[in-house]
Amino acid sequence: MTDFSYLNVDNAYKLINQKVTKTPLVTNDYINNLLEADIYFKLENLQNTGSFKLRGATHKITKLIENVKVSGVVAYSSGNHAQAVAYASMINSISAKIIMPKTAPQIKIENTKNYGAEVILYDSYFQSREEIGNEIQKKENRALIKPYDDQDIIAGQGTAAIEIVNDFKEQSIEPDLYLCCCGGGGLIAGTSTYLKHIYPNIKSYSVEPIEFDDTKRSLEAGKIIENKKNAKSFCDALLAPQPGNITFQINSNNLEGGLSVTDEEVTKTIILLAEQLKIVVEPGGAVAAAAVLNNKIDIKNKKIIVMISGGNIDLNLFNKLK
Image (tube, rainbow, N blue to C red; front, side, top):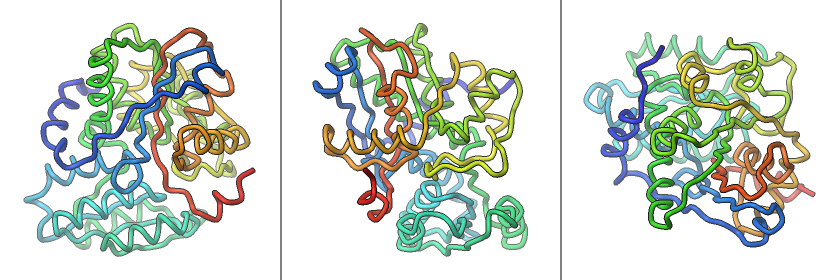
């Protein structure tokens, strides 16, 4: 078993809390009345670079800083981790190479380049991003910044939970449920660890696109299950092939189970969040809210934390949503 604990998250927060944005925790009367529950949305779409990923990348690079000043870093990502690593590298004047799929949203590719990183595009059907990353790491002696299966990354992502807890303490609120998007599982691993320490009775659930519900199925099977090779979803931020080894160990201990939502349910949720919360949310960032809005779990009269993890959506896609 991994030795990861809330202390990892506490230590990460001490290192990065001045380097990342404290994002809002908001509620909405219309949605609360509609669902007969108290929903609290953690708006990580308002984080610098548009997602929670900056927390983990900043923490990892801060810890590595002396080792990577000369050789730089390399990372692979469909977009949000890419932008986060590029931004954290730029702020610290570090060279970054980022491996991204050719199918990644254009906004994520362009933003990564704008943060000063060299972007290497690959064909996800015929090439392995891990193999490309490992080759660059060895050849150029760069530090590999993994997207989720790394305790420093997980601890950094978990710092969002410290902010949630601090906001709740100010209002004397104790949550019943926590719903969080899940790709590789780093965000929910870090945040659920801290929330469970503060609120031992909280029930946490991963939420995934229905064809990429590997964490849900892995939790049910008690072992890591891969997604099907031909699976499709427009939730580009959540298309990890399987849970991480470290994240799965943590999530097996912390989570009650997993939930899944359809692309259609996510589409309607993005529109509702734009109308009611006046925020722009990317598909992967909206899955936890979609689970709540589509009654995937009993929430009546409960206090629920819902993670809104990112807002990096192509404008063309956003305009096409109906």
